[in-house]
Length: 345
Image 1 (cartoon, rainbow, N blue to C red):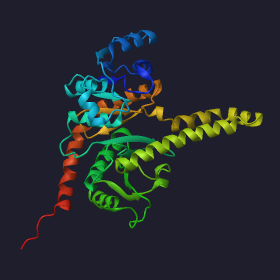
Image 2: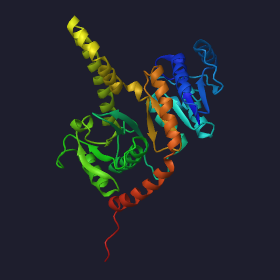
Image 3: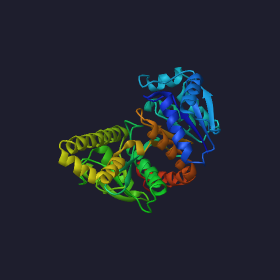
Image 4: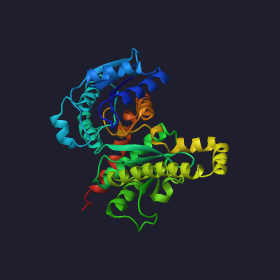
């Protein structure tokens, strides 16, 4: 189990990423090696500072960094010796089983296309694991494709369904298309046609779901285009952070409230953990020949450690073989709907 980590792409620098790797290696002995990709001098210095001497660590030198300001395609083309590109190449050439990057999302998606899409997959999708009332759900696409066609969302539903089965352990995930209401008359051309196609597939499809359903245990796999999905993801992260901040402010406003907060401290810790994006680490880019994990740009040590855990889970499950077969079956159905056979004379 070999994991390549782009240690230069995040907001907090190489040292924070390496501290996260240190945490992950301490808890998972099944990881064979972690390849730290970035400027060798920076990595060597950070390793010394963190006192990380694990023999499973390898350094892969990359002299350039893809920043958040770089245009995705232009950055991939011009910065061929960037840590992100070098990490992708390690997976492409079979020297690593997975890549983790907290860098530029658009560049990671564009660069990861070098790995090739799985047979039959038209668009890869970012699948993000998010908390609901009593369990998690999967949101996809969370940002890889701003513009989609109905057949793309139908394929996302197939990918999300299998991901929920293998990662969440659900026997029959409830799959829904995100819309502005649950009635069939709601939505737009994209959601209406996507829902029609999803209903034909071998899924536990429950139709439209709306914002109320997401965090109320109403659905297990939420399908949408990347434009909408990314807005949902970032809004949820911001709201969660704000709720924690408001609670802290209100619960420390008086001695009596502080006492009540101390009594209920374990409950508040549990709430904070459930709403903390660092616990989830990163989102997987489904539909490619390789495991690609997008970590948040602002990831700190715990988030990087969680991303390594997510990558390890993905490698262990090796779901791509099953996914190819399920996509092929779905495509056979979708082809009849999108390009129906001519009527017999």
